[in-house]
Length: 103
Image (cartoon, rainbow, N blue to C red; front, top):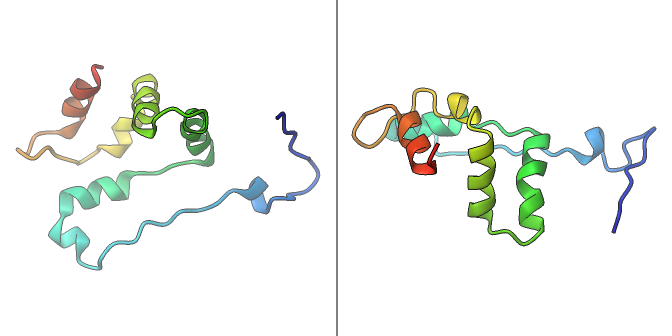
């Protein structure tokens, strides 16, 4: 079904129904898990990014495959997401993730 968004007013709420998602953790999470905490702090999603990620999922693609395909096409996201994040053995995570994805 083709949908047309109406202009001239946010009938779906501010910014056409844009939502905000907040990640909550235990107060001492960053102290107990600084590496995972750094990753959580680095992750930022825009409405446009979420829409692009969800489109294939809405078309019955497995979420993990849709995410992997998007990240392969947009590896620049890793630069900010993985800044300061380390692998289990203490190395920079960016090369390890890119290797895993075959980039």
